[in-house]
Amino acid sequence: QVQLVESGGGLVQPGGSLRLSCAASGIRISTGTMGWYRQAPGKQREFVTTITSSGNINYADSVKGRFTISRDNAKNTVSLQMNSLKPEDTAVYYCNMRPIDTMDSYWGQGTQVTVSS
Image (cartoon, rainbow, N blue to C red):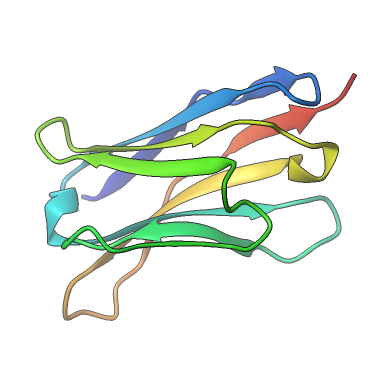
């Protein structure tokens, strides 16, 4: 059974930083693309960033230069370092894993990030 568990969310002031982590079990993250998505109240879930099994990274324009995704295959975790946070970054952040050569897609339960003074 595949499980993705996010952690690290919380309340932070504008300009602050947070680091999210996603721990996978039941599957090796090295076998697919890992990503972070977010959903703000009243809005659709949106793409934030992905990292492929070969290390190719993509970011949404809204987070480029502020967010950094990384993966630790040995620990089977993926992280999202978020700097210079803005109120518009407030959302529930979800970890996602898409194994290579399948149509499967796995999601974590989400972690709340609130940016407010």
